[in-house]
Image (cartoon, rainbow, N blue to C red; front, top):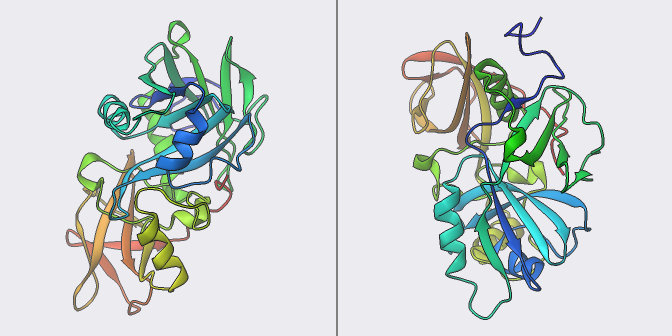
Length: 291
């Protein structure tokens, strides 16, 4: 049975807190290629990828789904970052590029805990007239996301939304609150699991740090998923038997289930771990959400 009897598997619910930024114009794809950490140039029209925007020091400002609708139309689906602030920040880098950057509040985001009707893996389904569909399915089960006109907004469903966020964390998709923005490199967040960054595409902000870490084999930390008996706050310390191991980057809660994604050393001593004095259990990250 679903956590919420009303949250039927195929029932649409609002993915509150997710917003759309549109990059449109002759240089839309080229601008995205120059600014973001994944290879937009090699992405086919009508497909999407995980991508992100980094500081010059290689820290993740925002992680998002990038939809390449055409050379002249690229959409960013932001689940956590302040979309209005990010749109304004991106505009500072337009210079002579022919691209308009806008927060599109005429579109809203909804989810379903069921298989997509038209999308498949990285291939976008639907159309701009009725809505676009993304396949968010992974080893943890089928999910689909739709970007629809604001007038068609689905109802709020807190239980279904919480289950969605839990599924993100189980698949190693960090949901970064403001306190965790600009704190972690892509490798520290294990974003290679999602095929979310490129070390070969050429220059972009933070590229030197990302490439150096990759080619010199100096990634020393990565994501670990824990289940806790109590709610956990982002930024909380993860302790081993004798010392602090790292800290929590992302959390999710649904009724009695509490998950935390923590950044810890890849080579760490075996033994029990705790967060805020509570013993936590390490869980295996699920695969299948890479695009």
